[in-house]
Image (cartoon, rainbow, N blue to C red; front, side):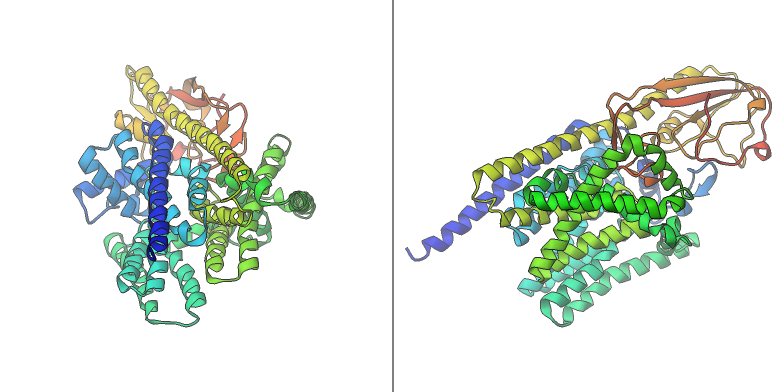
Length: 578
């Protein structure tokens, strides 16, 4: 009888964890399986082409050339990510082929590992780990980003499990766990360079936890050595150390412009609020009405003061000009997303202020470190750069709800479930709209190929992303502004949305046709006219925007006179279509 009380709670806990793992697995599959046929999109082709290269030359993932920005360029100078995700794609492609469904189903595994890892990690921090994992999954940042074949979700999966192994290794003093964590840190860094930030994060946590340095410090040398080895390896292969090359590329957005830097935190806060939507939908539960009113008032004052102080500066940068143009139509959305971002950051600040222990330090550094990177150090503010903080915010939400007694109050549980449902509904809707946009490029490539197959001359195209991938698959030639000569009878296809596109001078064109394809959903993830910049804040200060989305437009230029490379106009950010 004396052992029964100890055994029963453990058995109950294990059964509860098993049920939660099953529930999270089913929910993850329901979120991603309907979108598994999504066309390849944005930077997906870069990872796919490198994966195909790996299947032929395993030790030279970037040893080829591509026309991505309008000229044939070595891949080593185009990509700004390490190759582990490409190797993973090569394995999927070698087993199941490189079709859209095969690749997306393969990338379901990292998404599932990320969600289940969040649950496992949250068990250490909160009595409501299921809420933490669900609040991580049901976000636009995760549902959109994980529905790609890029490196972000795979890196985050490595990141979370590295944290799990490290924390448990310190607690249990198990060297095998610490070694496993070091290997996972190296894997995260070789998937996306941001993964190396695990080293200072876990070092700070360990010092706060142990109150001294120990032999465990040596394990941090492994990810550092792996990244250094990659640097020397790529230098030897391509004459270019790709890690330092990415470091030089990253902060170009604010180089020599620190006086404008006060503007970027607001945009980054907007992206956090939109991408980590539960921080907004749960705000009425985790904060009192007084705090919410104070936050709204402070937000209004800060925007007004910032507008007054930075008004002249805003007109000197593209983002500032865009904000001023869109304020009447997108100002409310921007204010709402900023409010959600403020709520998210406040969760981390209040948690460490109240608890002041190693666990709260870890979560706070995780959130604020990612915020600083996304706002100031990355080449652009985007959802992919704020994605790493979403699991930490899920845990912080659950910790805040613990204080309100969510585990024992049925009405509160119902309200939490409804708030997460609302977040999940909008998140899936946004992911579906993003898939609709991705599919439109593939559909248009098919339409244009049929439309121009009987052209008397050569058919060329500009643009990249998924459109380029499918056009090249169909045998259409990418236009190279350095080498391509357009001759009478040739056709040049130009997409309006792509900032690398620029149409030919009018005197060389016989006629222009327009092809449009409507987008079905009233949500945009990347559209400068709506201020939506999920993949890059260059297009707007909102991670996504609701409203009437303009159709995708493509121009078909029929060339009437020979146009040589030296006569080609300089690149611009938008092609002017009639």
